[in-house]
Image (cartoon, rainbow, N blue to C red):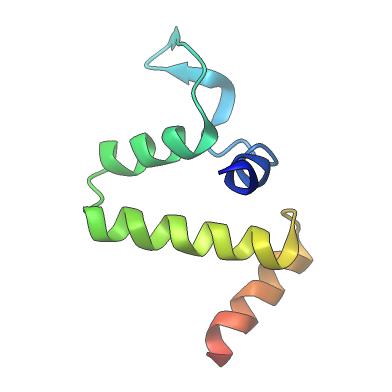
Length: 79
């Protein structure tokens, strides 16, 4: 969706657009994040959970900062 694209374009989740030392075709940050998680052995459930948490974070806070990350941690602990 447009909202998801806006959210994930705000942050580069996997650094530098490099893959095993080679330049690769740019992908959507969400696709990059999913690939990163899977390459590091994450299960489908873990991928789904991570994406849900990331989407919630950006819906609530809009940008990454130490203050926002701490607020999000507190938010999750209170639920």
